[in-house]
Length: 167
Image (cartoon, rainbow, N blue to C red; front, side):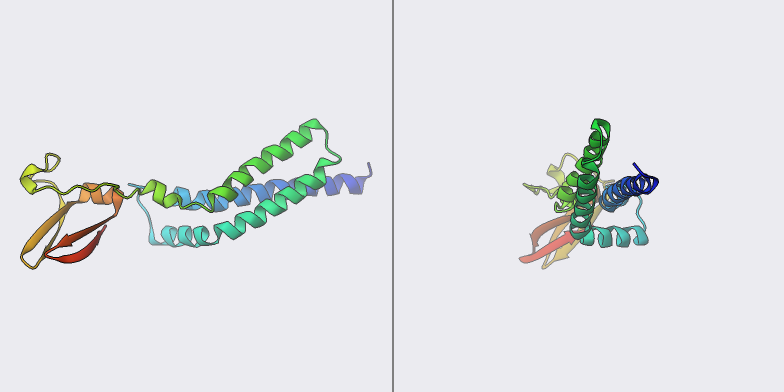
C-alpha cells in the first residue's frame, strides 16, 4: 500500500468517526439539555429545540455519510477494522431512528387518566401544598405544582369553560 493510500484510509477513518460522533451529539445534546427537574437556560432550550427540529435530516445525512465511508473502508479492512466500522455505524443507526421519535413525550408523560378530587379528599395534598388555582364563573380548581412540574399540561373544564393549564 502506498503512502497516499495509507493517508486516504486514515482520512476515511477520521471522517467515519467524526461523522458518527457529530450525528450522535446532534441527538444527545437536546436530550441532555432538556431533562425533567433540571435547571435550564433560555439559550439551552432554544439550542435544544433547533437541534431537535433539524435532527431527522441531520441524522439521515450522518447515516448516509457513515454508511458510505464504512462501505468504502470495508473492502480493504481486516476483521477488526470491519468490527470497528460496524461499531461506529450501529449507534448512528440508533440515533437516526431516535431522531424521528418525540422523546420529550417520553420524559414528560401526559397523565393518561387524570382524576380530580375535592381538596379534602386529596390525600396527597395538604394546606402547605403549592398549587396553581383558577376561578371561573364561580367555580374554582387547583392543580398541585408538584404534579404539574412533571406532566406540564392538563385539560379541564372550570365553570363551564374548557381550559388548558400548563407549567
